[in-house]
Image (cartoon, rainbow, N blue to C red; front, side, top):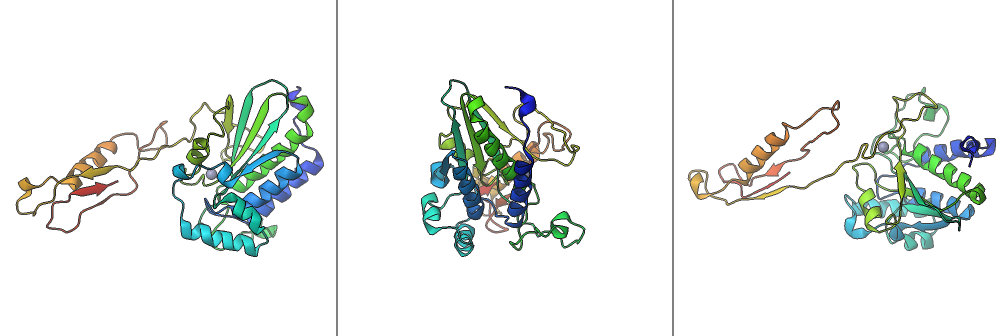
Length: 294
Ligand SMILES: [Zn+2]
C-alpha cells in the first residue's frame, strides 16, 4: 500500500492527544497498570480487535521485580476508580495487553511493542510545566509519566485505530503489545516467555526521545537499549578473621569480580555498558564472609 496514506485523520489525532493526557494524569508503576490496562483493553475491544490481557499475555514464572503490596494497592485503587471487578479478576493479578489483527490474507506476522508503565517520581509543581498548564498533571501522588510511556501507549492506541480502519488494505497478522513494567527492564521477558510472540517475523519497539526534533524518527539496528540483568552469588567458607586460611572469603572474591567488571566500558559513548548496582556480603567485621551477592 501507499505509505503516504499512513496519516491520521484530525479526529484520530485529537483522540491521540486526549488519550495521552488521560494516561499522563493516571500514571501507574510497573506491574500495577490496572487502570491503564482497562483503558487500553476497552478501546481495543471497541475497535473490533482480538484482545488478550493480564495472565493471557504474562508468564508469571518469568515476571521480575513485582511488588505484591504495590500490586494489591493498585488493584484497590483501580476498583475505587471504577474498573470492573470482573475485569480485574480476569487478569489474575497481571497487567498488560495485546491486540491482534488477523487480516485473513497471507503475509508475515508483524509485532509492535508499546510500554505503559510510569516512574516513582513526583511530577513538578512548576506552573510552566505543560501538564500543569494544561490541567492533566499526575493524579497519583509520587508517580508520574516522566519517561514518556503515556505517549507510547497513546501512539499504540492510535496505531490500533489506524490498523482497524485500514484492515482491508493489509495482509498477514499484526500484533500490538502493550507491555507492563518497562522501567527496570522487568516486563518484556514475561511477555516473551508466554509464547505470544513466538510466531512473529518482524518486531519493532520505540521510545520517545528528547534528542530528536518534532517529526524526526531515528531508526536503529536491533538491540538498541536492550539490557540483560544478572544476579551473581558467591559461596565461600566462613572462619574467624584471625585464621583466614581456614576460610574462603566470598566477599573478597566478589569484590575482585566487581572491580574486574569495572574495567569494561562504563560510559555512555560506547555501545555497551556494564554496572554492578548492588553489593551485599558479610555477617560481622571479624568473620570471613561465606556469601556475597551482586
Ligand atoms: Zn522509557
